[in-house]
Length: 123
Length: 163
Image 1 (tube, rainbow over the protein chains, first blue to last red):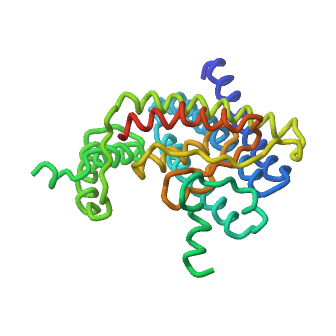
Image 2: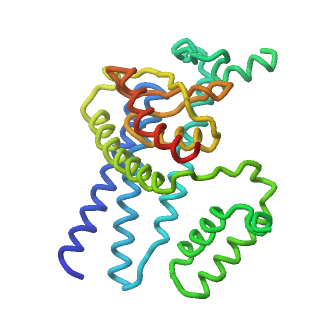
């Protein structure tokens, strides 16, 4: 395998590992739940993205066949990561009462969906 | 007739593509099997697709994807800097409200997902009437500018695609 491609793959793997580490660090270091959510939702997408691109290049060159199923991992990751982050945030707003006072008004006649539901349940 | 046989043409293409990607090879057999699945699955699941969003501007989709990919790269570097070099307490973290012009549920879902993937923002909740989005910003000096950027970069393009 040519040197240049080796170097490219190594760089991509290192970059991916770096961003995954930063994501994990953010999860551990930031002070509260909502801030912690920022680390894993972002750093991991680029981290895993870089690792998958490295994998695509490696298998395309080493096996001589085009490898595309890594794109599916990216696709499903992009579909699931925002949804799970959204559900975590909603659960947090529902459970943590001190968080509610920080919420800005909706600027609409009705309130935020998570809390509005609760009121209509007779809470 | 066409609508009954192909209730969701975009889904047909997507299922066929996902199958080919999954098999990781492009041979006639795989493509034909993918097309059969792409034909059968939308027919069988048609009752689960009450609304069928129409893509009004297919070229804008490509533009939107490029903008989002670029923003994901930029946001990763920005968030990495914030995590590594700033104390957690010193971040100007706050919630902002983004009033929505979009009405199609699919477009709002896509906008919320995009916001979560891009610079220092996570979409946290939707107003009960679906007209405003609650966004949590990791570090923002100017909340109004953040809201304006979200509306100009993503919502304007999504509105052109879906409405």
